[in-house]
Image (cartoon, rainbow, N blue to C red; front, side, top):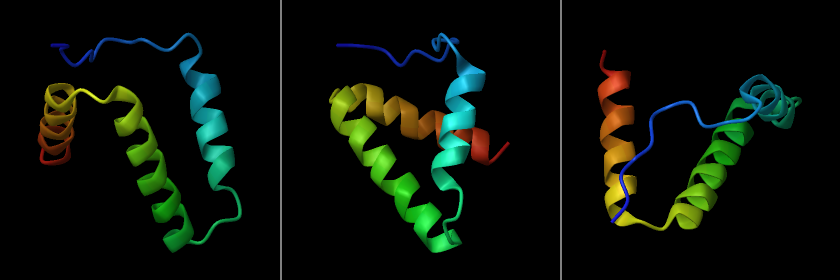
Length: 66
């Protein structure tokens, strides 16, 4: 069983952020929301570990309410 890694783990976080923002260029709010939903589901499928996904949902919920 894996544990959610919340430590920095991207080799180029600024580059990834720039690519993520560029992916949304020209999209409406609804299209951008749909893209985010598809990306979340693709990455969740890649992770595949139910416990890690539960931890990720809890962490995201906690930070959204902070």
